[in-house]
Image (cartoon, rainbow, N blue to C red; front, side, top):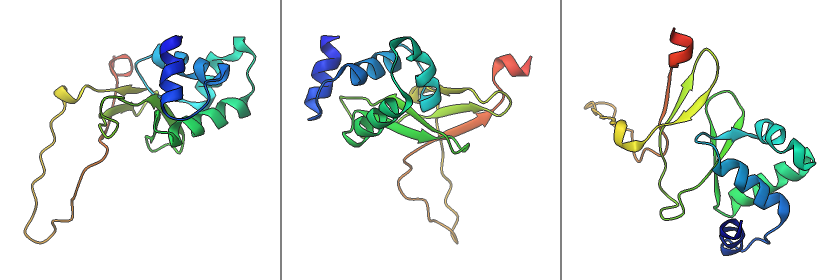
Amino acid sequence: MNEFKALIRKTGLRSTPPRIAVLQALSKISMPLSHSELVDKLAAQDMDRATIFRNLNDMTDAGLLSRIDVGDHTWRFEIKNQENKNASHPHFVCTDCGDVSCLPTANVQVSHYPSASNNKVGNISEILLKGHCEDCEN
């Protein structure tokens, strides 16, 4: 818990029990979670939806969390890499069940073949792969 308190304070935010609870919940899983999923995970701690939402946005603005949209218009949150806050990693979305998972960057290689007439790709900031997860494929 002291690690989370220090991490929050390092961003300039106050270390409050709801912020610590959100970070603890996000640290226990290996995929980004939506606001609703976090509300469900934190239901036993009797926190209201608005408090969780406000803290997610505050910690995202402070650079502690990253926020992604996998195309379903639902923001999902995860703890940012604190050593390299600009580093991002690819995500996989199952088009059947909607599960979102993080992919290690070492396993994903993207090649860009610019055509002579259309070379508009600059700096790629996010990679999102879609397909069928193993559970849905079987």
